[in-house]
Length: 130
Image 1 (tube, helix red, strand yellow):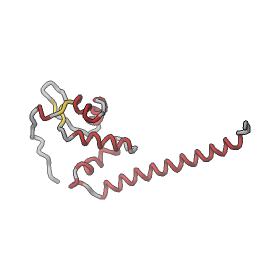
Image 2 (cartoon, rainbow, N blue to C red):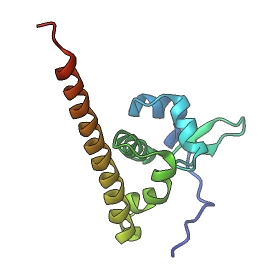
Image 3 (cartoon, rainbow, N blue to C red):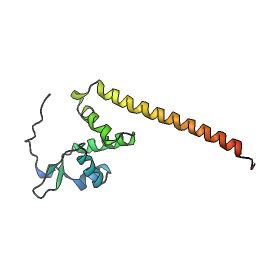
Image 4 (tube, rainbow, N blue to C red):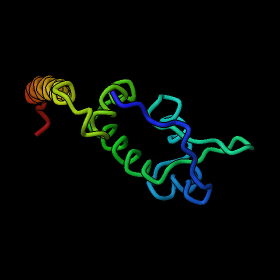
């Protein structure tokens, strides 16, 4: 595994504030702080403690949003995100996890449809108003 050079520093004008990242992604600063707390994002800190993000983080935030919209939790996203970001880390694990989540959703939809069918039967049995 290649280890990243964490000693690399960027000029402050190359980095995005949390407000700029929020503006570019349409995601609230509160959500961005949550993503960082969950280990989904990493930021640099200024001397006064303000977060600064690499411009590439914009794509990562959008990907995280897509994964949330697909029904995954931050705990689900955490182990697969590196595989999605870095093609060299892509393994069978990624597809297995995505398929597992999809299959869970398919099963939930099937159960909901069964519930709807039961409710339709009850409505039909008791709907004598017409």
